[in-house]
Figure 1 (cartoon, one colour):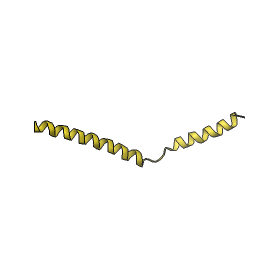
Figure 2 (spheres, rainbow, N blue to C red):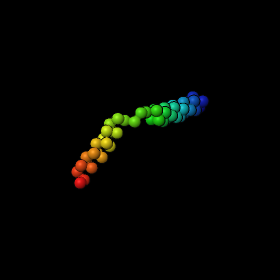
Figure 3 (cartoon, one colour):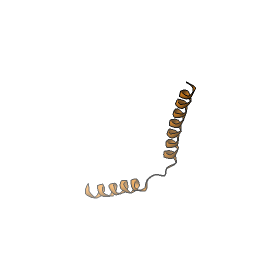
Figure 4 (tube, rainbow, N blue to C red):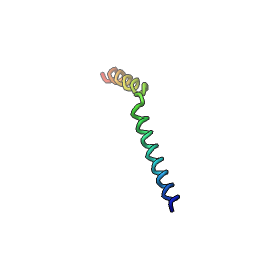
Length: 51
């Protein structure tokens, strides 16, 4: 009985740790360069073809 509770607590702690690590990794990530390039290219292309 004690081993089962210990296992459940360890699994929950592991899931919480993984979720927290994902949040920290996403928050510290730099913006992707290709997103910026794509949006600039779209504005230039849309401006040329829209007229």
